[in-house]
Length: 248
Image (tube, rainbow, N blue to C red; front, side, top):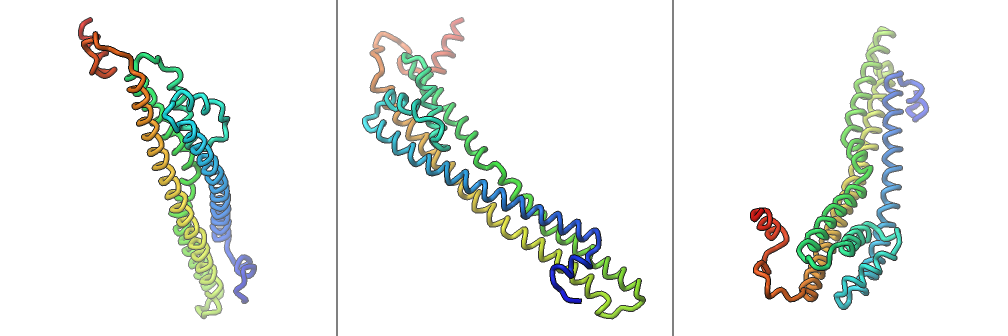
């Protein structure tokens, strides 16, 4: 017997063939997910960089209102960072101008929600890579067991235990083991690489959100109306609400 791929396939039992087909499907799924994620994430990264540059120009003098107007006309192709900051600026435009605490807290909440949504979207499909990486070796091990069983069946059928009798079954067992490792190892590398990329982008989103909140705080303080006659000037929005509820 020649130990080529076609010869091994011809001598495989039904169970080993099912195992081999399963691992080939797992490998194909991993390749598709990696290619799709890389295309989506690289495109989103480029769009985010372009949006960040445009927004930085609008925020050069700290004018949040002008930046909000510009972000509203940026369109949909703004990347993950653009979607987070644009959502915050849209909320800022809808908030009452006289209540700076409510405005600040509303913008902070929408930044947090949108950031979580974007990170979740960037991780889409990565869980499949983790499943393939963790289960492929065990699927290959199952094929190994089936190959050994096939070798013993051939030994029982021939009534002899020579190497030529069991070599086909052993080769089948080793082939499924090797295939399982070949599927798992690239999946582990792809999963770790994509996960590290998403973690880095999550940090970028967090830093950009904090910078926007700092600019918003300075903008609101700069445009704060005189409130010298109010006794609760230094109270936050939540504290004033609690005082009003206690009075009722």
